[in-house]
Image (cartoon, rainbow, N blue to C red; front, side):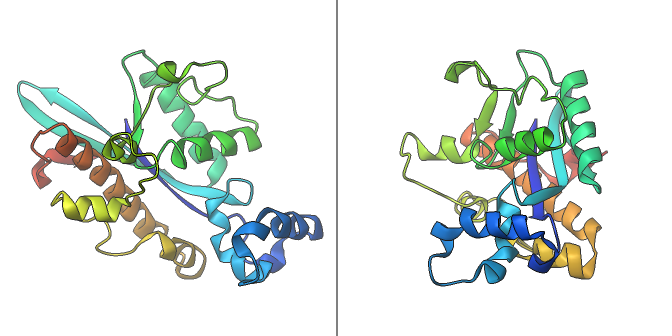
Length: 227
C-alpha cells in the first residue's frame, strides 16, 4: 500500500493553546527556533510534530492486476482526525494484514508511519499490526521508503519527492500546492477537497517513483482509478 498524509497544527493559532501547551511548545522547539523566531511565529510549523499537529488526510493507493491489465486504485480518508485514523486502521486490519503486505511512502519511515502511529496512541486507538513495531527486528518491519531506496545506503542523503519526480521524469504532484501551503488552505480557505487532491497526487507520485526504481513503466492516466 502506497500512502501519504497531510498534517496541520492541531489548533489554528498559537493563542488557542493552553498556558501549559504554550510552554511545552516553547521547550519542544527551542533548538529548531534558536533566536530567529518566537514560539508564536514558529507555530505555523506545528503540523510537523505529532504532539502538536493532527492528520487531516491519509491517501492510499494499491495496484490491481487482472488479465495483464494494470490499475492503480487511489482513495482518501479525510475530515475529523479520529475517524480518519479509525477507518485507516480498519483498512489495514481487514485487508492489508498479511505477511505479503507492505506499506510504502516517501520519507515514510521518518514521518508518515510514526506520525500515524503516534496520533493513534494519542487518540487511544489500538495500533494495527503494520504500525506496531514493538519487539520487531528491523527485517520484520513491513515498511518501504522510496527516499531510503533512492539513498542506496547513503544515510546522509535527503531528496524531496518533488526533486525525485523531476529527475526521474515523472509528472510532478506539486502542480497546484505544496506542503507549506496546506495549513493556510485548511484553516483559512477551508478547502479540504483541494488538500485531498494534492495528497492523492503525492500518493500516486510515490507509486510512480517505486515503478521507476524497479525499472517498470510508470502509470498512465487511464491506469489510475479513484475509488
